[in-house]
Image (cartoon, rainbow, N blue to C red; front, side):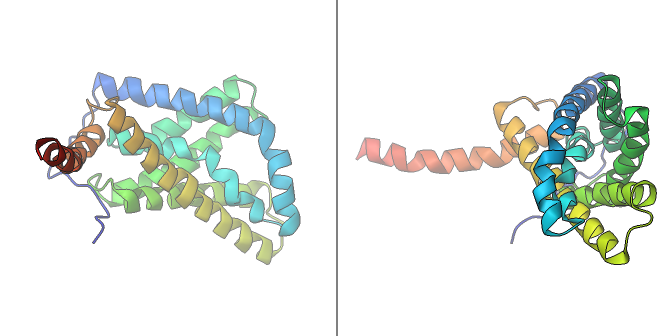
Amino acid sequence: MVSTASTTTRPSMRWRVVDIVVASVLGVAGGLVFTLWNLVYSPLTAPIEAVLPGLQALVYAVWLFPAVLVGLIVRKPGAALYGELVAAAVSALLGGFWGWTALAWGLVQGLGAELVFAILLYRAWGLVPAILAGVGAGAGLTIMDLTFYYAAARPEFMVVYAVSAMLSGAVIAGLGSWLIVRGLARTGALSRFAAGREVSRRSEPELASAAEPAERSSTS
């Protein structure tokens, strides 16, 4: 049976200096990704939209991943919201298409992911919580876009858009961020975080078991 969550008995709610620094760095990196994505998303999504209007939201979670990624690494109240807001602010500062209105989207999208972690009492950080946080961020995107851009759209478009946005959040922001955390942890970059130590502890038995056949062959 696959474990769906990583837990701690009494998670610390207090932010450390390293938490602030790493969350800020990841948020800025997310803002740079946003800026690049802003330049290319329209021509990339046009063929998808032509197939079925609303389906273009299947790739919109590129705008959501900082919330889930920072939340999974820092594991403190407000981390998901902070990561998404920093990314949105950097995007606006670098001349994003939507200017400072991006902060409103960052706020709601970050709150969507933050709410999931809060419901889980900031104790569950496995794959399923990551996917659910991505869905929450996708729900935030859906609320903002359908309210301010597509308020007059047909109901079927809204349904396709909402499902696509939340599915995108689950896969790109949720699964994608979980994989990034595991990759970073294996390099040792997250050694000062519980996320990094957990992956290291799981990797040690795997490395030991992989070394056993080699040892046996060398002694035979």
